[in-house]
Figure (cartoon, rainbow, N blue to C red):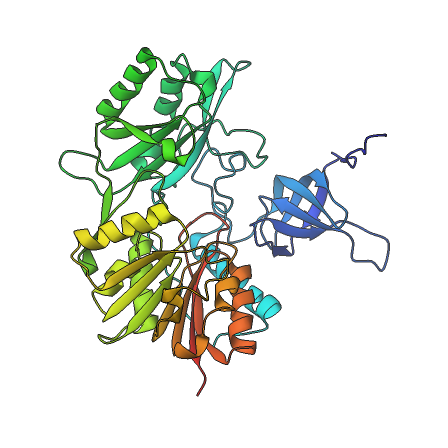
Length: 454
């Protein structure tokens, strides 16, 4: 059987007029076509609406082509100089060339377009965007690691825009400075290990600093056992920078501390007098400042009252559940990861919150026979993964909820679920807006309030 060949890519530079911006932050143009035809769409990395650029094709598809900007012939007034020297190569963020105020408005437009196109709904009002620090905000992430013999060096960084390659980073301005400014040191550390070819990734996570500890942890994934010299080098690096060092020889459950013996990781939500302890691979919100603003807005929209019983689905460690317990009669959190549920319960005990219950359940599966599903509630909070919450919404006795607040990390799934609530279940989409959890990326975090119609 003959192999199918990839479409031939024409590397001849071409001029393009940029008409729009895609949801992933690329400029939209149309290639010349026959008279009377609009031409084939081409998505151009590094280009902004209103610009005229010289571009080079990078990929060919049936319905559209992909390209990258070679030169900006006529710049948009919204274009700014990227702060990072690696912009255009690293795939970690794609909007550094767009003015920050325009970035958030572009994300707001993505949300509204999705609500209209997918959900066939529109909010009664558009919430003002939530923003916080736009640089040095990322407190959790994963660096890829690759030893490149041809370069005689080890690369540590995010994936390039071509995800087959690891970006050769010297720094990262979106990662917290304690990590983003030490990528070169991390690369030198790994390059000096005997096991340098067997470490595919390093995860980082940061809680609050204390007088004794930076609150930052690094997790080194390693495919083969580490020798004593390598372990000693990792410990020395951790001691030098006040980083906790964890090793991961296998799956998630294999993660264990190398130094110190029992590092304590936690962050505080001071407005609600809540401290959340976590483990180094747990999910926490990436942007600490924006997280606190997001919680405050969620409660403003949900309007929790002292006698309310609130259901918090996809609750994780209790990021919303535990501070909400300070405000309501009872809150029940449900989460699919049993480990997170165990730590949420422990966090409730640590904070003296007896009115917060937690249950482990796969919310994509039928839960109608469970006790928590049959309990009565006043309000519902949802913070699902990218796939959304449609499966559990279709099971819940929704008539009991007079108010629903939906926190979303994917505008398409929010739009679909909004359509279900509004067009099939008798709710009104009162308000919606975006939150800039990931500045300089095309990631759109949003929040929406639904109220049952009279």
